[in-house]
Structures are given as C-alpha cells and as structure tokens.
Image (cartoon, rainbow, N blue to C red; front, side, top):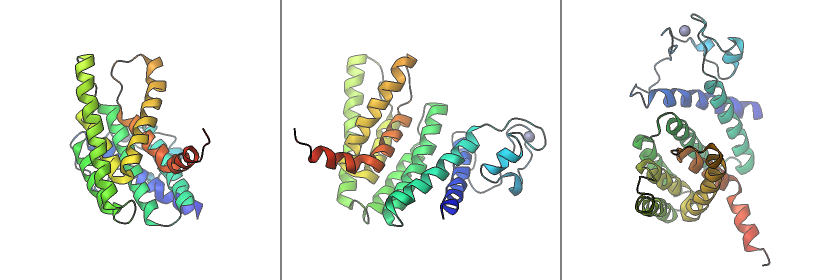
Length: 243
Ligand SMILES: [Zn+2]
C-alpha cells in the first residue's frame, strides 16, 4: 500500500516537473511526450519512470548523455513521500484529496517562483476555484470565501504599507493571490498561521543570505504545508495551555 501510494505520488511529481518547465516558457503543458532539453530527442516511456529511470540512466540522457537536472527525481521523490504521509495522517477522505491538490499546486508554484520570481495567475486562480469547490465537503464554502478574502486582504495591506515604508515593492501581486488560494483551501485561521509560519521561515532562511529579493512563494507554501499537518494540534495546544 505504501509502495502504491508512493508510485502514485511520484507519477504526479513527474507531471509536475513538466508543468514547472513548460508553463513559464509558454509551452503546451498537455500530455505530449517529453523531450530531452539538450538534444530534443523524445523520451520513451521506459526512460520516463519516476525516480527509477534517473537511477538507471545515471542521471544522463540516453542519447546525448546530457545531465538530467537533479530536480526532476527530487520533485518525484518529494511528491511520492507527501502522498504517503498525507494518506497516513488523514486517511481516505475528501480532506486528503483537498490537501494533496493544494500541495501539488504549492510545489509547482514554489519552483516556478524560484526560477522566474513570478507566480502564474493560471495556477493561483484555478487553485482558488478548486479550493472553493472542495470546501463544500471540507471547511465549508463560507470559511473558504472568508479565507480567500483574508489572504488577499492581508497581503494587499502589507503590500501598501511595505511600499510606503520601504519605498519599493515589498510584495508581488502573485504572493497576494497565492495566499488567497491557500485561504480557499485552509480558511481564515489557516491563512493567519500560514502567514506566520511563512514569515518565520522566511526570516530564518533569508536573513543570513542577505539577498535583497527573495521569492516569498516557497515560504508561504512551506507555511501552508506546516499548517495543514500540524495547525490543528497547535491550536488545541495553545487553547488548552494554562497561562
Ligand atoms: Zn539528450
């Protein structure tokens, strides 16, 4: 069972790798078979088995021996592990489905944001609609709407204040829509804690790097991931804590 879940996740990871590569380049992200980025030769199905093919081919193209970027097997490995953990944490239910879809969107968005410093609206807006659709069976449509409004509203205010204080764009429009999308899946409390976790991780990671412009998307994504897995436990812990 663990193995099957891992394979299923890794296959989605394989598709994610394609989306991350093709979407910012405006290439069709359909099911047309992948080509080697170097020599352009079609990659056959037996060379396209998640994780395994990378190991068998020793990380190189079968034809031109160009290096296959390590990120492909890493993304496949990550989604495989995420699928296993999510199913074991939440069981077979619509909430698991909702979280898995959210995580796939967050992974694609994080990598594209790291690559290009942009977050495509196609992803955040379609994710928002799917999150809202699923909320009827998970957090209720009302919480979803409030979640979207909280996410967009909060970061919009941050963007205005940031621009006023720092005299430069502190927050991109992509980040604003991303937190709205996260809100559609996780609701308003999810948004608040996602932003909190994301900001903490962002500070810890970006301060030593001393880079002026660090994409915020991956940190927000990490925050949402932490909330999805441990948010409820944390809220219960604080609620029952004797101050
Ligand atoms: Zn090649």
